[in-house]
Image 1 (cartoon, rainbow, N blue to C red):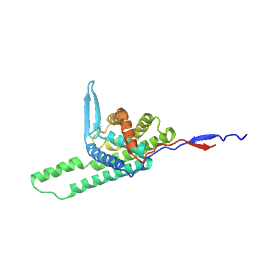
Image 2 (tube, rainbow, N blue to C red):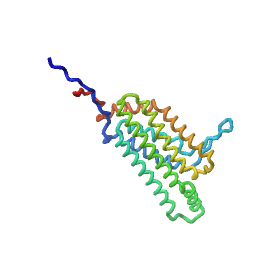
Image 3 (cartoon, rainbow, N blue to C red):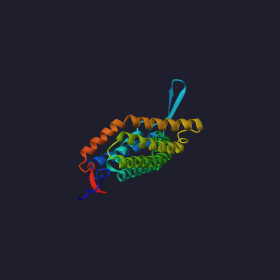
Length: 244
């Protein structure tokens, strides 16, 4: 009597093709968020809380977490290569924005009182943006790539399971790297020069962005599930018996 061959289960993590309208929309929104948050980050912001504790941050604090949420969606649905493409595209759009600001400031303006006042306002508002962009781009590049790598590696292990846990762990890793790099470069630009202020800036930035993304994990997971269902090329892996 012939013995039945033993079998093992083999499956691969599923991803959709990035050649879809959903990917294009997410990519567009991600680029816009990055550019606007870079502009907002040129303004230092301080909140005074009861008890005499001040929170120090920048003007882009409320918007930048959205870039990571979108990065999570792209990584989970479309994979690391698609996420890397989105990250580098956002990087390029931010560079285009800062180059455009520099050219606009350099162009000769009107010499009347209003023209000179407007020129001075542009220089003050947009002049230091290139430093903020450098801080944001380096932080964003490192943070988003780490975020995507951790999420994808975990998906390869858990497949469609433990989505909330994967989102939270990858967010924590990515946001810490992003915040530390960004604050180290941007702090002097927005007027943070002492160690206490820098520690406050890093701590609040990391905790705020991470907690906001944690609060939005149910929404992020819902969006991911909806997009997966709407993507014809996203097919969940089928268990395949393979001879051992």
